[in-house]
Picture 1 (cartoon, one colour):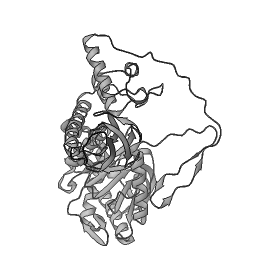
Picture 2 (cartoon, rainbow, N blue to C red):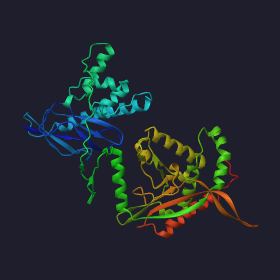
Picture 3 (cartoon, rainbow, N blue to C red):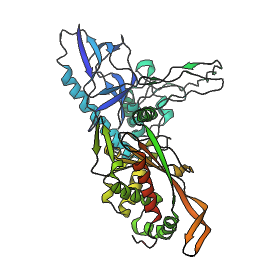
Picture 4 (cartoon, rainbow, N blue to C red):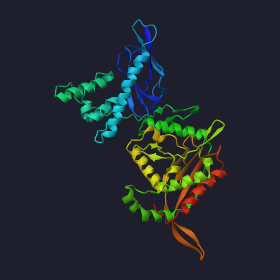
Length: 450
């Protein structure tokens, strides 16, 4: 009995790894050629991988939620053939990879070009599961959730396969009869009030505590992006000793100038003028003055970055966080930064960011003031060594110094919170940097023209 190695194929440009999200076959199950074997997720798209051989699944080398690199052996299938070595596997892997790459491109194009496509959940109200590939085809073809649930599935546990939905579409288009299951009403199972203990999430050598649930609690598994964010945050705190310095800045001049300029800017550039690009311009100037915050640490080496690539933490509609990067921000004027900020924020909200849009950052800015927060203690976005949080702009009473004496007036002020890696950024550098940002903001020219 021969054994065929099933490898993770290349699935599109710049994709080097994928997360195993669900095995469609268990060890000991029979598998047919081209039958969906495993579901994987990349930073571009989720997809099913078909089996390139028929036989019995004898070994799974990666389990759910583990990350495999392109070319890794992820499973072994035993066949009844007389081939003593898996010499045919590379050719089959290449063929499967080409097909999947085309599917990914088609799914990406259809998602980007079809704004009226329906949105489907991976699990229906009755508990029926739909794979990412099936959902993508359904969304592209405008199949509703009710219509999708009515399709008879031939896969494991009556799952709708790619073949099932394509057959349905062929019959649907020609008006022929289609084998459709009746949609069954499923009663909601009563929730047990007994305390249950969830398995701890592994964080390297650090063990998370066992957390018992209580009566009335709801348990919801983290989605893939939230798991990645959680791991990245824990790693960052573990790697970098965080220190945070705070400075309050008077931004009254900026507020008044923006109020005077924003309508003209909108008419001329067709873009909104927010405070963010103004703040980023000041940050870029301060980085030029203190390049020691624009570095990375690799072992015992300090990598001094030539370019200033500003990341801007952006909240997604799902509640998750992503950090698109404005490359070479020091080469842009205020208008250029404003357009780049708006474009990145828009693409993040519309899920149109490209992989290169979230890579290469050298310093990150996060705006906690968007949520009404006065200040924050942001976590460093590795492998960077510093991050600046922008607090909410507030009207506050302040002492105003004039040649004629001091008096109390109403000013617009905000806090800047600068977290930095104390391995390479000492308190003097971290504190002077954030103070310089505040100085640039307070010295903003109210007579400036764009």
